[in-house]
Amino acid sequence: MAPWIPVAWVVLLFVSSFRFTGQRSVNAAVSGSASIENAIELAVYAGIGFLAAVRLLWRTPRFAPFGVGAFFAFSLLSVASVLWSVIPLFTLIRSMQLVALAMLIAVTAGLWNEGVRQRDHDWTRVWLWYLGVAGVASIAAFLWPNWQKDRWSWPGLHTGTTAEYIAIAAMVLLSMWVEVGWRISPRFRRFVPFLFLVALTLLMLTITRSALFGFVAGAFLIVWTGSRLRADRRFAVVGGILAVAVAGLAWFSEALVEYLLRGQTVDQFYTFTGRTDLWAFALEQLNEAALLGFGYGSARVILIDEFFWAGTGHNLWIEAALSVGIIGAVLLTVVLAWMVFKALKFQRTEPGPSSSMALGFAAATLVSGFASTALALPGLNFAAAGIMLAALSSRQAARVPFADPGSDGGTLAVVGAGT
Image (cartoon, rainbow, N blue to C red; front, top):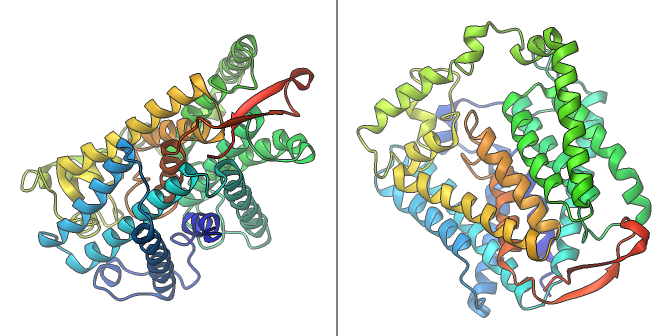
């Protein structure tokens, strides 16, 4: 039933990011002049939204999780902002993508809830495919180099976007390493630590500080709550990481500072590469429309006249406030907070891959959100948040025991059966 569900999620994770005809001006983007990539992206969202709408009309799922409701509210507010948007056509198109994603969340959670589809099987399949695509793109990056000011990137992508993909891939691999419930073979599990180290190395090559700090926060929670690690091992792992960090600061402090400065001055680093001036300007603009903002995605035209490099607010909450005001910023915060609360609850009572990854993703987003706009427009991070909301919204009561190949002595581990 509904075999398109995992395919839809994988496609949404990638379709908004890849470009093969070069960059376009902001004016072309907001005026409704669609590129080939935009046309493909919108067609994909329209198709998935149609399938989700049909499924919802045929059988509306019997659940009303708070997090999904908050996401629906944010999506509908974004659509409503067309009425006061400074770029109404752009706002309409992008906000309807969020509505399509919200419907897919509801359909996916409903199918998993009713047992029509097996949650953990779909979850593992989606993220294995994600790792496969990320692996191919990484290999291509070395065959067709795309270095941007000595920062490594995938072909056709901005370094920051590549870093976001790699950071999520690294968190997936880390979760596979320390969490039960992933439907992966023992042979693949043996390679997971090596693949994690490769992903971590690639992430460091991007020299994207927001992604790096976000990954550290997410990785800490994934390790600290990992059900395959006993309490003593958690302390040992975290202690070992801290010891390495202290040693690195003591012995390689000059190299680390040079790495983090990325050729900038200390003053530039302290201003987050000029972001503090951008944020001050954005807050001044918000005096005119603090409650409802200027329309979803409007930062693309509000900021660029003053800051030629700023297509977004470079801060999660400032971007949301410019788009849909304080109300929208609060709704996004509620979604992330609900993810953390729900994932922590599940990790205490019935740990599994979805709650493990949701913790890591939410923590990484909250940390990196201070200097980036991971949830500015539909794309990787909204899609990742969507599938995690769906997983956290499905019941986790029906469970079956199985022997986790990576656990001590082959002891039985109880995991979600994918209700």
